[in-house]
Image 1 (tube, rainbow, N blue to C red):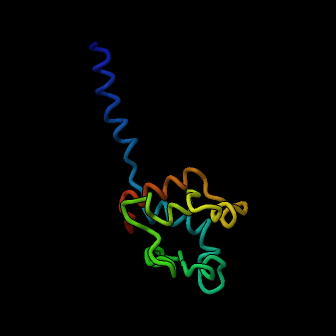
Image 2: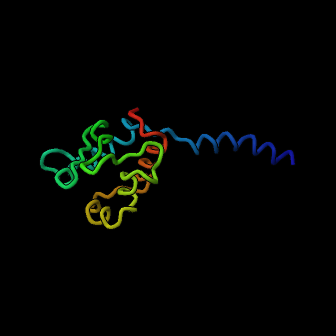
Image 3: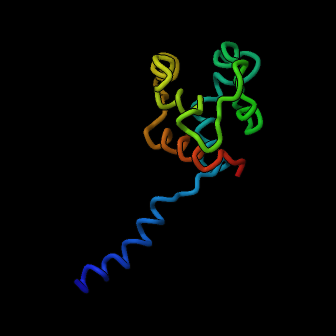
Length: 123
């Protein structure tokens, strides 16, 4: 029993630390956008911009959203259109448009989810 208490005292802080990883827009999200999204989501000639009006060249532009409205619901990745798109919950859009050899990895998708859940801050 003493052995189990000792292990739990060591593991609980470690598990808590691992469960909460602060995601930074500047350090984590912007590099993904610059590498995988900006080619199409920039004005005036990007296909993603032409189709939706969504520019992703800055935090402010991303938070402004598209011609259809905001795409980020800070604190709620389930309702956030951005997360629906990158997670493939918006139908075939992600598979058809965003899978041309430069698709987001599972870790990048998780980073977007965590960033939105943490409030989608400009940090």
